Length: 145
Ligand code: MN
Image 1 (cartoon, rainbow, N blue to C red):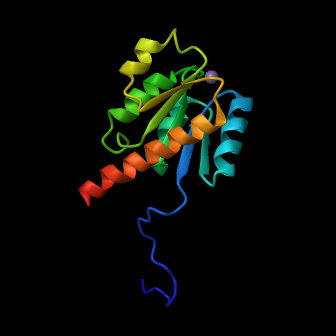
Image 2 (image 1 turned 30 degrees about the vertical axis):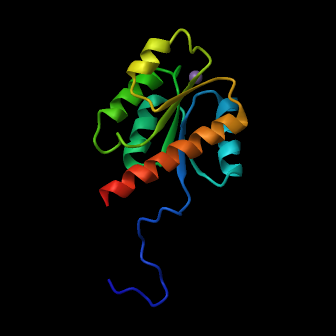
């Protein structure tokens, strides 16, 4: 199809709005994460359980995922492992969050997640971690192109 003059062709644009998928079953935490991310200019995708989180990750390929551990049915750590085992999604940085960090310490390490943050989340620490992981990803992608 011909493109009208002045209409931009869709392209991979690193300066475009970064999209963060939040997988979280607690409505208050979901609201909090989403508000923090939106206030920083991120696009927010939401999933309230692990299977829909995996599905949205595969379908939308977000720039980063914030993953809760305790979710109804499938654990967020199992979802993390599944996404890290899939070549289509393994490059997406995943930050695992839980209030039960001691209980899950070994599983969190084994999940292959890129970062871990204990709840309650500190706003500036949370946003810094996200920026750090997004920068690292851009740097890694530069070698591939
Ligand atoms: Mn939860």
